[in-house]
Image (cartoon, rainbow, N blue to C red; front, top):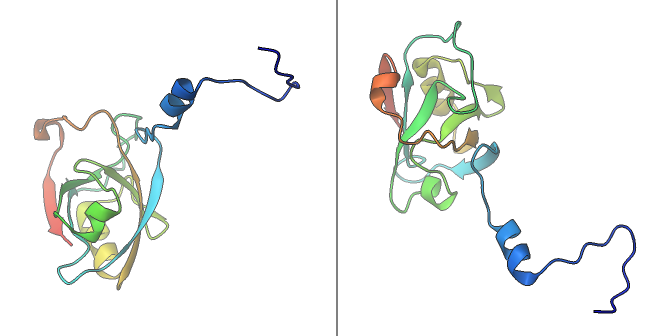
Length: 139
């Protein structure tokens, strides 16, 4: 079409650009910062009660703790957290192999602000049969 381009220019159709800009956060860790609401942060944490000394994080099962549910209208929902998101860090502390009680205590001690590094995987339909010795903590 007669356009001049240099070596670092790419011409792309509007449709292709839109497709590329769709936010696909699967497998991309992201950090969300939550403010405690009247009823807490708005999620239920679930995961293994035992330390994961032998646990090796994988792409599809990256941590022992995950979000069991998200309260409608909560700060967690507003921040884009989803059921079955895995928790990688709590306030900068790696919790991928940490037992449930320790993670719950980190959240309790967080005060009014909580930073979570989370990841969404395609394993959101993984059944609870694959997750051993689980505990719940409602924030």
